[in-house]
Image (cartoon, one colour):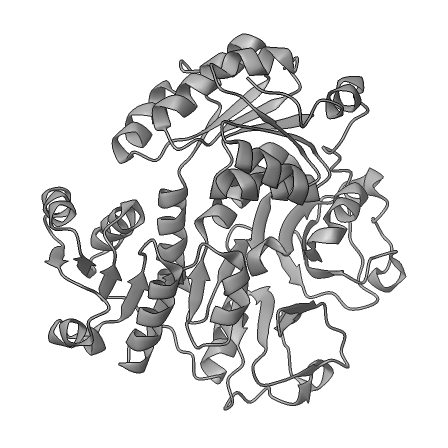
Length: 465
């Protein structure tokens, strides 16, 4: 199967990178020559340029029923038309980015008629992720597996943390596992002898109740969000405010643009919309930021989001979340004390990958800027993993079996534990090992032998439409 991506902004680039890392044949189509050149130089994909109707480009690369076409241009209407053109050209599946709230709601029923198999809305998906972070975890980034029974959380290790300078084997881990350590932007899949150090960020997976109890032991107690302040009045803020209001929280949104404030006031009558500069400490204090349960910074500038989030934390807000678009900022943010960072392109790439893999992968979460994937599989008898002690499996160093679920029993695996037929298995893996893991579970959806792929490589830098 080939993955054909139309439009290569931040999201398109992230999707191309994600599928390329997973060993798919990827073709990127974009209007801009500079973008095409950048993609060709940076990624192991084929990028071509077109200056006209996308249907012509799709026909020239011989789109067929095995291909997936993902339309993520800056225009909702353009993405809809691209999916129609892709289906007419013979594409098997199509995915469209639809960002307009009205379109998203209206197309939920009629998307089949418009030749769209799946709609992705990065802003709504990001708002949903922020809502989940605020609702279910006292720590940072989270992921839910096994129908919510198993949870993964991100815990920054501060100077007062009781885990500092302890080996993982010396920690009473109970029904959870320290599955990964992020240290100085480096990923460590730890063994029992690895030591946790100040400044680390650890990723813990286990039974939800035990994971939350772990947080309590570290002084990170869960508290319901009854009030939230949101910086920035974009689409993510709209969706997030709508979610919070539905759950009974009071919401304040600070937005510089007066016209946008008026629009938000009309569609969110139960929220308080403030026209002002959210980086102004006097404004924040006059709006009683210190009394808020949560502060979420969602402007279009990473630097502003980080700075104001740090200010909110300093002013005493218990839960602070920041939107970060540049993935190279994520490790830096982790060490600053901000509770969680969300990146729309990573969230959407994970959603699309999960859609493509379908039933083969039940759940998928991308963490650490997409460097690590956490996947939930169902083991089958032909996978080669069945009834073999974990310690004897040919498992890569860059991956770890985090949980095995047998019926109603959730197992944090030790050396003698085995995976049985139909067990659910949660695995954390570095991106470089993902293909190997999927092959173990017989999830083989990557590159096929394709004569067209090899022939078309020869014209990758010369195609102009």
